[in-house]
Image 1 (tube, rainbow, N blue to C red):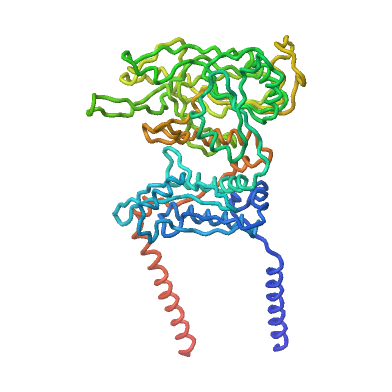
Image 2 (image 1 turned 90 degrees about the horizontal axis):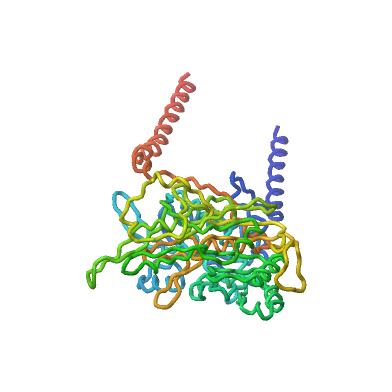
Amino acid sequence: MKRNKLLTNGLALLVFILLNVGASLFYTRIDLTEDKRYTLSEQASEAVSVFNSPLVIDVLLGGELPAEFAKLKTETKQILEEFASKNENLKYNFVDPLSDNPQPEATISELQSLGLTPANITVEENGRVSQEILFPWAMVNYNNKTIKVPLLKNKLGASSEERVNNSVQNLEYAFADAFTKLAIKTKKRVAVIKGNGELQDIYLADFLTTIRDYYNIGAITLDSVEKNPQKVLDQLKEYDLALIAKPTEAFTDKEKYVLDQFIVNGGKSIWLIDQVAIELDSLFNSEGSSMAFPRDLNLNDFFFKYGFRINPVLIKDLYFTQIVLATGEGNNSQYNPVPWFYNPMVFSPNNHPVNNNLEALRFQFANSIDTISNPYRKTVLYSSSPLSRPEGTPKLISLDIINTPPNKGNYNNGNKPVAILIEGEFNSAFKNRIVPVKLEGTKLKGNDNKMLVVADGDVIKNQIRNNRPLELGYDKWTNSFYGNKEFLVNSINYLLDDTGLINIRNKKVRIVLLDPEKIAEQKTKWQLINVGIPVLLVFFFGFIFNTFRKRKYSA
């Protein structure tokens, strides 16, 4: 008996030793979550694995945090542990920039000057309400370069649970994107097309500054096509993508043919088109009105061949963004936000990596897009709301509409596409047509390609203050933020991304939070349960034990 007991104990000790030796030699992590939130995608693993010197991440979420941000901190730590398991050079730490700070205002100003937008949150505890400022950002440092990573994803009307879900869902992509920016060596090239009255550089400044981390940017002017089309085409072929942002002057057939051959030869393209000529500034006159006219860009036949048509209509939408109008005179002037039905607020259907988990977009005097049956794949990325309608042009647009309540019964022709993605093996738009000019290296059919079309040229336009560009998507009049920049950055990344990094955005994560209302209502109840039940169990088992002992030893 004693020998068997020693043998059993010895065997158990041997197994214990072998398990510890094996654990020290072989390291693995097991993700037991249903949504595999802690399992990095192949693209994310590749993005972090390339660094061979210290990669330091400072997360500005240290200290005591409200429940929502405490959860975000925990999830951020978890995802960084996963990244660190792929590369031992990655180190991270959590810091509170405002803790024990004798000059918090100066620190806040400094952080804001770096482009770190704070989050103002309301904290309610024991019936007391207070305001706190947090900076939900991470700074990824490698060698002498730093990339800012936003950790918080806001969406209009989102609850606390939805905001945390959106933020956690974006973490892997946000960090992988930062690693990609730091490691990139060979940048693809983006051509900003000029010569047809496109937006001035100052209105594109914020977007172009943002994508400089990924791409080299240059300008191609189509004015030279008339004299030397071959030279322009050869220059254009050196670029990977052409950006055409709100042209206002008609394209010649030669210019269209040069762009067509760029596309058929593999060049990606983004078309941001206003098919109606009208600007909000043109309404600020003594009459408070202006005529909206169809704009002839001579692109209808060109677009038709690629499978779509931009209609010369204006979308009037009951899901709108606001404009600000002044009332009164002189020092008594007041600036009030008012509804503007010609500036639709469009929401993402979350049907593609480009638009997944994005804030609403702001459109201004948008048109509608019709798709035409052909072999190309077309994905509607954004549409107007169900409570919208197209209005034909020419049409008189007046500021008086803000004083007339809309009749919802008239807004039943909505869901009009305003942004589409076209993919396929593009044929030349000049196939079976007489070409306007002879060019070398032309093709009638190309390989797989992609094209983005948005029926609003202003979707890329940043506002200006004191002759300096503001962030794209920020409205200085209403102090609102929209998702325009992130949508366009995602779009250009998708069009040019060969690594599949953008597909990380398809990952779905669900974080379940406690209901704060139920917590407040049932706080006392659960406190009694958590404290009382263990005490009662102790008394119960003590009573059973004593009763058992009395019966056993009383005999």
